[in-house]
Structures are given as structure tokens and as C-alpha cells.
Image (cartoon, rainbow, N blue to C red; front, side, top):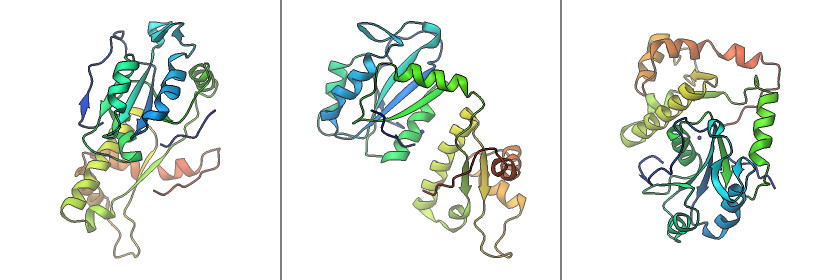
Length: 241
């Protein structure tokens, strides 16, 4: 059964990485959890018998050069989830947060930690078939040119926000910039101006974006990328968070 996962801990205590090969993983499956121990046996059990792993050896790749891995991203659970997974699923890497970061923030931070080429976001109440990862790789190979995500950052919170609220926006935009640099999805910037007088110059945009680490060349590219996104061959769906 496939349940559409959401979509990419930070601090956090990160358990000791399990022994792996020298090359980064091909795919990291991120399972987000908050007090969901009751679901984890079925979810992680189904991932442990993927046909990309050696039968009877969950997490051990058939091909070390095409290695897949599973991480549990725990949002400060209090139901013993972490201890249960460490004891029962030692091949799963556990990443613990000090607080409940919520859904998208926890996934974004975990994705930024991964060194893998691809990331899968999976709900903890999901059970997948044994060819789940193989099917994803096969589909990806058949549609290698497909790109599914573009992100627009609204810079107005950096102008209007103050104090802790502004710092939170800067931290979140920095995380998204890191993901953009890693996965190269289209990135645009907006000032959310409601009048001509409120519009920002390119210099203003460069200064604002610099607050979260964006380089001038990256800002210029982001400001000129909208036309190419909207001119894509596939329908464009705008999703607002």
C-alpha cells in the first residue's frame, strides 16, 4: 500500500552510523515518527525485506555500489519508539530531535543531512511491498529528465518580521537553500509586493537573500527562472504552505 508521503534532525542526537560502504547511499528512506511505536514494526519490517537487500540481512545491499538505507527521524517521542527501533532494527539509523519539529521541518532537516542521491519520505503507518525501492529506481531511470518540484521563497517576512520570528524564517530559508544546492530543483524569489512602491530592486533582493546565505549569482538565477518553470511541458500546480 502506498500512502502519499509529505514532502526534505537538526540537532539532534544522531545515533552512531551503521557500517556502510565508502560511497554515499543511492537512496535514503526517511521515516518520520512521533509516538508511533505501534506502527513501526510493520513499516520498518516491510522496508527490511526489500529485494535490494540480501535475503535475511535487512539493510545489507546486494550491490554495495547501489546502496539504499533507512533512517528513522524521531520527533522527541515519549512512547519508547527510539529504544524499540535501536533494539529491534539495528540496521536502521536513528536521528533524534530534542523537540517535536513538526512534519515538513523535520523532513527538510533530515533531507539536508543525507548524502544520498535520492530521498524517499515515508509515513510511519505505511507498509510497502518488497519491490518498492526497485520499482522507484526503475521508474526514475525511465524518466530521468523529469523534475517535480520548484520552490518560491517569499522575502517579505524578512522585511516585516522582527526578532525571533525573523530568525526562524532565516533558519528555514537557509535549510531550503541547502536542499536546492544539493538537488538543484528550480528556485525562485518573490517580494510579495502589493504595489509598485513596495517592489524591491535586485540589489535589495540580493541583500535580503544574503541573510540566509544566498550568493548574488544564485539570486540573479532565481529571479530569472520563473519563465522557464512556467514554460514546462507538464502542467504546473502551485502549492502554498
